Length: 160
Image 1 (cartoon, rainbow, N blue to C red):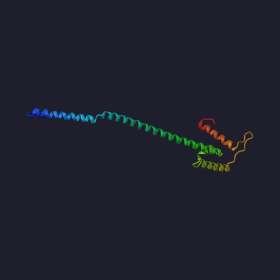
Image 2 (cartoon, rainbow, N blue to C red; image 1 turned 180 degrees about the horizontal axis):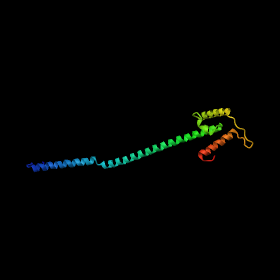
Image 3 (cartoon, rainbow, N blue to C red; image 1 turned 120 degrees about the horizontal axis):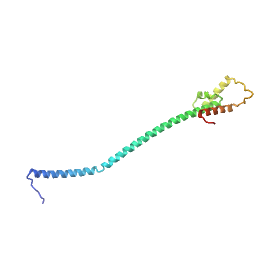
């Protein structure tokens, strides 16, 4: 059958119990080692994911900053386009460049109607001096184009 030994002393009991405790601890350690065998790998992956999250966060922040700068530049560009269009309309209507920013409306058609109404009012209230004998007679369109070209050269520093 089996080898059964009678325990007669405390030392023998301590030895048997100690052996069983060691065996149970080894089994528990083996089970824990098996259960947590991928701990270091998961820890490394976690660190890599944290780095990727930080990089993506930084990238999003940079993209948002660039988008805000782009929106600001577009708004500024739209302001310049609006001013340029109002100036062109004012000059073509025979108004001084200074009146361009006074044009009312939200669209080019409304600005044109306002400019024509202002020009009509100014024409009715202003008397022009006669041309001297050496001054060439300029048509309304030629004068407007020259005024616009002069203004554009002054604003941009470029020749039209």
